[in-house]
Length: 313
Ligand SMILES: Nc1nc2c(ncn2[C@@H]2O[C@H](COP(=O)(O)OP(=O)(O)OP(=O)(O)O)[C@@H](O)[C@H]2O)c(=O)[nH]1
Ligand SMILES: [Mg+2]
Image (cartoon, rainbow, N blue to C red; front, side, top):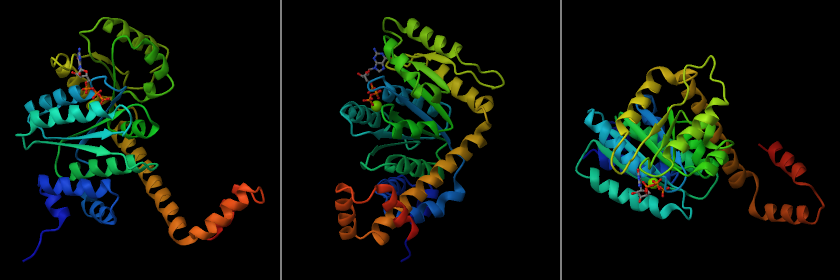
């Protein structure tokens, strides 16, 4: 009996194979690198939609509605909900459970929560590879939902083909705080919970911030779309905005953005591998302990130590 390789089953779109493959990349299993190697040339067809915003903004509810809208158009979807394992994550998991029920009977929808593994860069690596798996499996649209709290989460969404930043009314202070953070990654702003008091003011304050920026020479000025995710209001308009961005928005073009993403990924893989190589081959634990003793005792500085270890590479 011959068993069909996992990569082939992924390429055939088998949901169980997709689930298995995502587990491999999430665990950073050594087999994950081989898997990505085998599927990589079959990727690049899916359109990656990043959705981020503060905890409880309604991201999951909105993504659920987007999924329905995409499905009505006949395209298939994969959703990766990144659970930051933060104090806020309870809602995310609950939301995902509700979502999974709503689309459970639809083979055109694949939803998966990604957990953080608690080490630097692990989250973005795992998520990027999981998106590749869904892409290889033929999903037309891959939506990645993250809570816009940490750099890691923001990085994930930054490198999507289009980035949606979801805010809610009464978030005036938040909008101010966003200026430095996720403000500049938004291709499209969403003011969700538009049924609430102050939605217009929030939209106006985002517009106000946008008016301080110049978009001269760029083909795209981020629109502000109002939605009420619970009722599904504004979701078609949001999907339209995504399509508009896809066809004529991306500043350096989609290819440019993907090139940047490729650069991030490569450096990410390299740094993880170099560190692992150092940990496993170049710096025995006993030696590390001695070094740490000496640094603590101020006998040697960490820069000198780092230089010496790098010379062994
Ligand atoms: N009034 C109102 N409530 C909404 C709307 N959209 C979502 N909610 C509610 O807001 C709460 C949070 O929704 P989620 O979709 O879980 O929000 P989230 O941003 O995914 O939350 P986290 O993933 O935990 O950060 C839920 O109780 C939703 O029912 C909306 O348009 N109007
Ligand atoms: Mg959520």
